[in-house]
Image 1 (cartoon, one colour):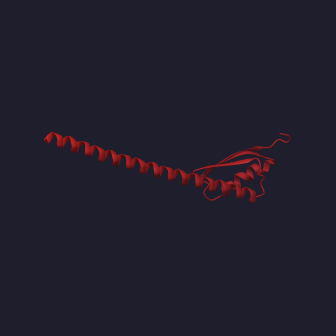
Image 2 (cartoon, rainbow, N blue to C red):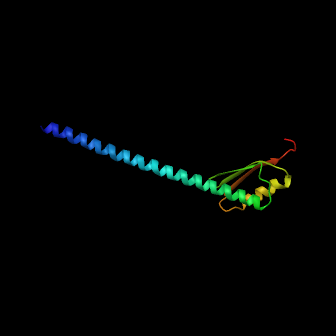
Image 3 (cartoon, one colour):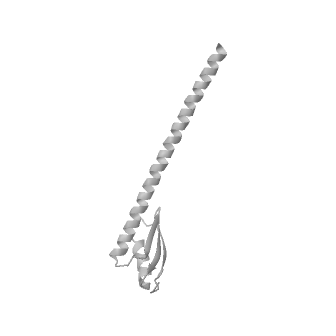
Amino acid sequence: MNTYKIIVTSLLLMAVLTGVTTAQANDSNTTASVDKKAARTANSQLQRAVRSELIKRKIDISGVRVVARNGSVTLVGTVKDERQIALAGDSADTVPGVQSLKNNLTLRVEGH
C-alpha cells in the first residue's frame, strides 16, 4: 500500500509540474507575440513619419520605398532628380526615431 501511495503522489507531482511548465511556455509565447506586434506597429509608424517628411519636403516618393526596422531606416527606389537623393536622406535623418539611415535611392532614367 505504501508503494502505491508513492507512485500516485509521484504521478500527481509530475502532472502539476508539467502544467506549470506549459503555463510558463504559454505566457512567454504571449509576451513574444505582444512584443512582435508592438515592434511592427512602431516600424509602421516610423515608415509613415519618414514618408510624411519626404512629402513635406516636396520629394516625389512615387518610386520610393521606406523600410524601418527598430529605428534603422532604409530608402530604396528611384527619384527623378539627383538633388532629391541627398535631400531625401537628409530629410529622413531628421525624423524622430530614426537611429540610422541607409540611402539606397538612385536616379530614375526616363523611359524606364
